[in-house]
Length: 327
Image (cartoon, rainbow, N blue to C red; front, side, top):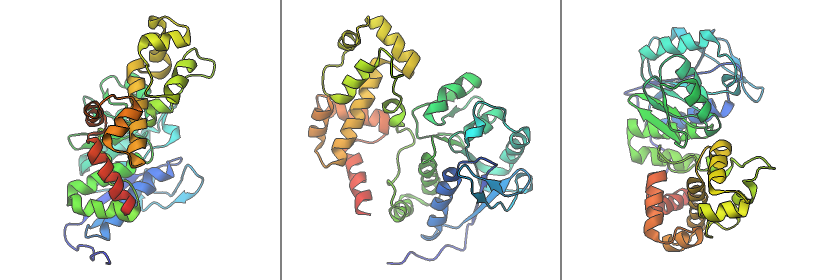
């Protein structure tokens, strides 16, 4: 069945703030969500804006067409600041910071994708707020801007009318959430099915790979412990047993987990097990089987960990996965 014609009422202007070096997927992925929503009855007017109104060169070397200067935006429903590698570890263009600060007063809601949070932070727009960014840069954001309550695991965070999201593809999750706020679950489900993406990850859902991919240095004493956890998530991975495997005291082990991985041994084990349970559910196993193979011991324990970290129950997660798979 073809999608219904776009609505002619209630147009919402969505403007992406871009710059040289902008991550292409940050802007393009989220923009596609709004464009696809128009096929199912939404009415978004999408625009790209830069400080000087000139086209920008993206992270992959291609040009991205820009239609206006940020300062020329008289009013917008949503302003989304994209991210880029050049926003971390070096000074951010003051003109870009000023432009975003000024336009924030002329939009209903403000958002950032990935390292775009550093622009909002530099502009003072995240002071006293909860926020997130790519897990790799979350600690830097927290250190550089102590007035921000950084949530390093979240896919995206909403604090009032300010939204921040994690790394690259999470911009798609954020855009889906914004569309759902505007038009409801039925429309956003159709958008997700059409784009062949996961229905919608909950904003508080953990950035799963933050701990799984953040391996210690190759010669770290932690390698023996983290390799053992990955090889058999269901085994005994108490602090005492991990310390013995790594030939460390429990205090040394805990200190290394904090300094090299930014977490505790127990939290690391839980996240590895959570990832294993997700994989088991994705493969079609029951909730009870998934809990057993991942090392959670019981379906109830797995349910608690799922709700705390993903915002959904294991059963609801599996149903969403099946819905997306059928799409």
